[in-house]
Length: 204
Image (cartoon, rainbow, N blue to C red; front, side, top):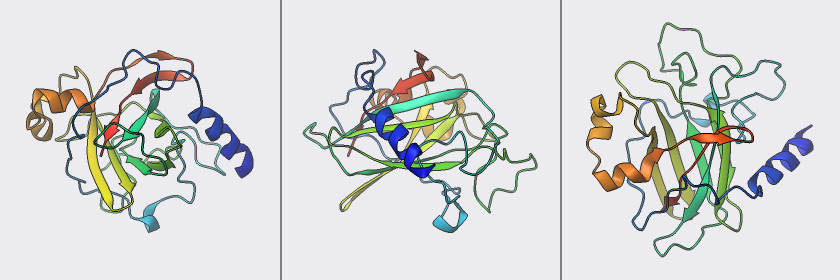
């Protein structure tokens, strides 16, 4: 089963629509950094299954609640060249607003089908891809996805937001971003072959 999953994810990263979507954000400046936040799951908190499909945990029949989304893009350096073999991580709360973290003391039940954290390694084109859910708000924050990129001695932590979400302007971290920085981390969604999809470059 693990080999089948690897083959599926390898095929997923080579889909022709990656990098050819009208909502693809191309930046000439580095992606703005953001706070890691209190709910970055340390390795001992994560599921053994920590791949780039956050919609189902290996060995479980449960499927993640929420709207399915596909997040793709490329990791590039300051000159726009693709960065291969970069580790891209994402984490976010589930559809009930709960994080995969022992410090999250929320009262809602955790979604047993949501992986909560995932990672992928970029290919030679710098491409990354995740299947996850549309981010939802939780008390004090607008919907967002946490992103961390690790490449050699470089590390970038940032957050992606839903473009046009009315909660954004009430979010203290989003409000600190300039207009250009917002453009670099805003997700614009459109219908795709595997759910709602969005693409964002990450420049490190």
